[in-house]
Structure formats: structure tokens, C-alpha cells
Amino acid sequence: MASISTHENELPPSHMTASGSRDMKDHHSDHSSIAPGEIAIGVVIGRASEYFDFFVYALASVLVFPQVFFPFEQRLEGTLYAFVIFSFAFLARPFGTVAFMEIQKRLGREAKLTIALVLLGASTAGIAFLPTYSHLGATSIVLLSLLRIGQGVALGGSWDGLPSLLALNAPENKRGWYAMLGQLGAPVGFMIAAGLFAYMLANLSTEDFLEWGWRYPFYVAFAINVVALFARLRLVSTNEYKHLLDERELEPTNIVEMTRSQGRNLLIGALAALASYALFHLVTVFPLSWITLYSKRSLSEFLEIQMFGAVFMIVGIIISGLVADRIGRRKMLFALALMIAVLSGFVPALLGGSEFGQDLFILLGFAVLGLSYGQASGAVTSNFAPKYRYTGAALTSDLAWLVGAGFAPLVALGLSAHFGLEYVSLYLLSGAACSVAALSLNRALEIKN
Image 1 (cartoon, rainbow, N blue to C red):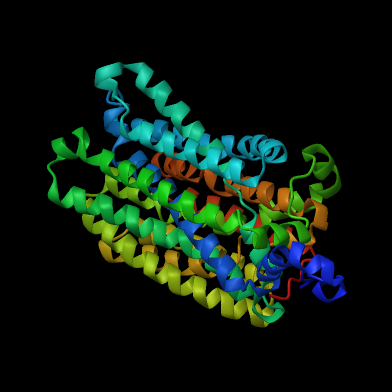
Image 2: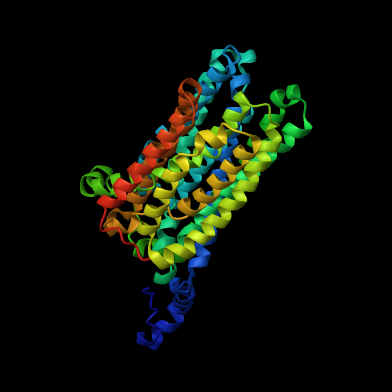
């Protein structure tokens, strides 16, 4: 990694007094001293806060919104409507990325990140204070939709480039290890969100939970956003990180030019991890909706099983870093896509069977998800030409979420309710097939990390 030289010894004595303090400052700002682990801290903080927001809304879409925003519909239809609004954030996210790239060009990285996280916090807090259908009628549904779109735009705008910076600055033989660190934010965020909802379901009456209890996790999400904002700004605003980001050409580029030049990488990046992103919602949001509608199990106890599954996911993510450094990320994603295809065949028997079968599906699903998801982010980042890497990595992530996960709860619940769980198997299998095809086409994707 290049460093900045102060050239102190090349200056004549008359310049030493005038510029000595400046040179010493530059010397201490030498970005070569920044360890990948330090960058990883920013990645983990940012992703954990975003995933917590993500899962608070996702769980509320199953446990709360069908009753408080769609009381005029049966529970199934109300849940499907809630999942439609849930998908709005994924549709809005690429537009947020494009809009905030322009903000960054004009106002800088810190302003972009501040505006994005303030918007995210305001949208989340707005949901916490939102009147329900019984108080505001159809207007409450419109406002919920707008706030959900606001969350999506903000998530697109919150891209800070740190995951790409981490991947590029990690030791070559440990890139898989460092790549998985940011992915730990998903199970951590899920465990906190699920724990809050499980506690309230177990300790509040149904009336109290639907009246005010469900709002509390959104207040917590707002508070976490504030903490995450200052933590991330403290990192990205330093001279050291600015030098690193500039050195790696991690700056916004023209979207049209990037799409024309790097369209193949965008497409492969969106499809390469499709199996992982599809499974993501088929072990978190969808099973909870299935149990809510078609089982008499305690929802708080089922959430506890899912939290235990998230521990399996953490272990799987950590193992993925070790394995990817040995065999390569492309080979690992390929093998895990095949494993997800095998798992898809057991969905009807396990999820539609006994409580033991349901628990087994959750634990197996989370474990496989951890292995796959640990290396899913930025799988083709190094394929982008340097000048397109920052924007390309952001849009690849947006498209992967949109194609793989945005409509997964809606499609899975709709198919299972009307045609049976066998069609959920086919849905997950199709995602695995797309991943295998994309990875097979991308023969150049041999990331040695």
C-alpha cells in the first residue's frame, strides 16, 4: 500500500519552522498504518445498525401490520399486503444509491452519509409514531408506504464504500476472512430485533402489544441509528480514510457510463448470490408468517428458535471466511448454491411437519445461510474496473437484494398458501439454479480470498 511521504529531509532549513507542524501532522496521518481490522469495525457497526432496522420492520410486517393497518382483510391477505409494502424499500434502494451518489459529488462523503442516516432514522421513527388504520383510515397505509420508501432510499444512500475498502486492503491470503466480518451484522441485527419482539409477545397482552408495544423496537432502531451515524462519521471523515478511498479510486462515477461499461458484472453480481439472498428471507420472515397463519405454536418461542438459528448463522459466517481463503470465493458460492438446492427439497416435509421438523429446518437453514451469506457480499467487486468499483459495488448490492430477497416473503407466502409448500421448494431451487448459472458464466471470477 502506498504511503504519503513528508519529504522533511528535502526541505531547506528555512522551511522547517514554517511547515514542520504540518509535516508532522501529515506524518501521523500516514494511512499505511490503518489495519484492515480497523476498517472492519466501521463495516460491522454500519451493517449491524442497518440490519436491525431491516428486521424490526420485517418482523412487524408479520406480527403487527396485518392487524393494525389491514384489519379489514383476513390475516393471510393482510400479511400479503404488508409484504407488498415491505418490498417497496428494495425497489427504492437503487434510486437512493443513484441520488446520493450525486449528493456525494456535490457535498462530500460525510454530508451524504449524514443525510442518508438522518433520513433512515426519521423514516424509522415516523413508523413508531404512525397512527393506525383505526385512527387514520387508508391514509395510514399511504404514510406507511412512504416511510418504507424513505427507508429504502436511505439504505441506498448509506453506502460508505468501507466494505469495498476492506476487501481491497485485506491481506491477500485472508480476504475471505475479512469479507465475512461485515456479514455478521445480519445475524446480530436479527437476534436483537427478534429478542425484543419475543420479550414483548411473552410479557404483554395481545391488546397492549398491538396498541403500543410494537412501537418500542422502532424507537430503539432510531437510537441505534444515531449512535451508528457518529461512529461511522468518525471513521470516514478522517484524513487517513479519505486518502485510502481516493487511492483506491472509491468515488462515484457516472451511472450510465458505468452501466454500459460494467453491465455484465452488475448482472452476474446480482445473480451470483441469488440463492443466498432468497434463502435469507425463507428462514427469517417467511417461516414466521407461516407459523403465525397455520400453526398454534407460541410465536415468542418460535422467535427464540430463530434466534438460536442466528447463532448457527454466525458460526457459518465465520467458517465461510476460513474456507473461502482456502478454496476461493467462487468455488464456495458454487458449492453452497448446490447445497441450497438440496435443502429446497426438504422444505415441505420439514416446515409443513411437526414442531421438531420446523425447528430442524430453521437451524439447518440458518447454518447453510451463514456459510453462503458469509461470502455473498461483493462477490464480483474485484471484477469492476477501479474507477467503477465504488458505484458498481453499491448497485450490485442493491440489485442482489431486489432480485433475490425483495419479493421473497410475498412470493413464498402466496405460493404456499394457494398451491402448497412444494412451490416454495421450486422457488428456492430456481434461485439456486440462477446462482449456479451466473457463477458458471463468470469463469473469470476466481477471487483468491
